Amino acid sequence: MQQKDNIANLIDCWNKASGSGLNVLDEGRMANVWNKRSGSFARNMEKSSRQRRTDEILAFLAECGFEPDGARILDIGCGPGTLSLPLSKLGADVTALDISSGMLDRLKDAVKQESLPIDIIECSWWTADIDELGFRNEFDLVIASMTPGIKNVENFDRMMACSKKLCYYSNFLRREEDKAYRDIRSSILGESAENNMNGLSFPFMYLYLSGYRPSVRINHSILKEENNWQETAEWAIDFIGRGRDFDDGTKQKIMDYYQNASVDGIYSSESDSYTGMMVWEV
Image (cartoon, rainbow, N blue to C red; front, side, top):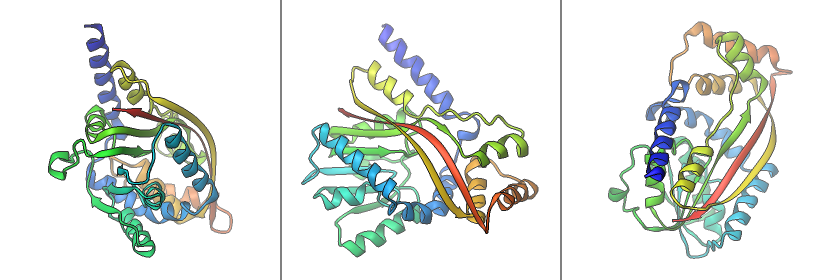
């Protein structure tokens, strides 16, 4: 009985955390946010830091006994193909799913250029019908890597229901955002600049209480980027303003912040993140 109470209380806490305040996004807004970000995400795939991170994930999967050659993989929130592309090149039969048409357009370009047999589906995982899609118990590995597609236990259970062998999940443990985000929240919006994420904590505790013992890796990284200040400001407006509409005055203040903080039209950002990834057998 205590185990059932523990799980029920955890799910209640998870639902309240995922449905609170600024974390709420409707599907249309979420797709629009990631459409605008798709170009920079695709460019980041070519960076050595991103390639090292992908290699770390593939090595972790190998340590957990996963062999990609001939395996069927579902990549939820696949983005521009950060994991779908290398796994397909290693011989996997990949189904790549994302809500963002912009991200999928980038993936389609890469698939066409490299002649890879990746099945691409535009769909929201929040409302996906896995029986209608033919996904239930069909995949050797189901991936949900750093994606907002998993926001509650319902989405997480749906993910596991598609796997007949392994699941991979990763998310933030803690992220100290770039100084601009903290300044905008405190000085322009009058909100708390605190932003300690717990995206891995709820799924891990849910698995543990349900009797699973996932293999876990915790990573620390400091990300430094340089981008055009206007592009960076527009992304910040979309991301910080998710779930709500900023008036024109607030948007202009944010634009002014980035313009004033840029050098020769380039804004330099830095974030400090702790992320976790885990693999388990369903």
